[in-house]
Image (spheres, one colour):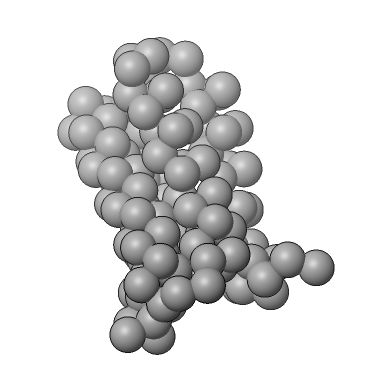
Length: 115
């Protein structure tokens, strides 16, 4: 078993990524650049958790968890843009926002544990 498989934040991020990939496929009316960027940032959120867990030094782990958290912020920002353009419902926006907020807090905990 790999270390990242023991992290709740990894499983939560992976589950959210699955929902994002479905969202992107189902919402072709959203600008293709934004859909592509959302897909990339969402995947980055997941894979940087995995990659960080495999690093030996605390500084390296912290760096990858920080990158993952940056990808979370990127996803939230993209949702903010598409919400402003009324391309996502308020309910869907709030649901994704809350899930990203939870993952962000979990990542902050991981980042702070690597000091």
